Amino acid sequence: MAWLFWVLAAVAVGAALAVVLQRNVYRAALFLVLCFLAVAIIYITLNADFLAAVQVLIYIGAISVLLLFAILLTREVHRGSPFNRLKFPALLITGLMLAALVFVFVNWPHNSVPVTGGQVAVGTSTMPTLGATLFDKVEGFILPFEIVAALLLAAIIGAIVLVREK
Image 1 (cartoon, one colour):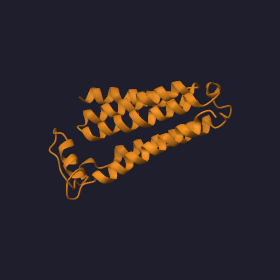
Image 2: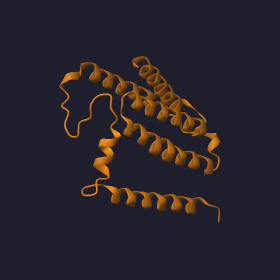
Image 3: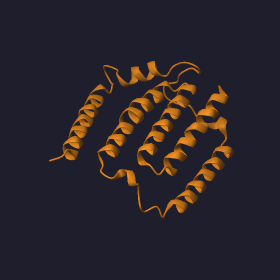
Image 4: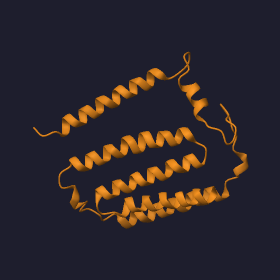
């Protein structure tokens, strides 16, 4: 399983680089979908089922589709950004941040992370524990989920109304 993790990590990093370096905005959005998908599969390999489901539903299903619709409904987006003067400073800052993250990860004492809260045995699914916590009849969060769904629907309808031709 370790080799699969590293292959997916390479795909995710490659797709993220393609998002940044791609001149065509539509293709960059498609590479972003590939990056989100690779991260979701990484979550599955790490037994984080809920995070994988959220990654697929929210990021791939909602945010990526929203970005693609925004790109397709925007006029003259195929030309790209004429103001590309900050590409090299952004690359330098990103490289420095990556170096800092790698330094912290390499020097982190991996066995000192405390585990608290609802614990799940290694190799088992996290979905039943999270489902019981979220949708409990006494202290659950079903009402906030329904409110967020109605809010997202209103936002989508508002975006369509703002974009349509007069």
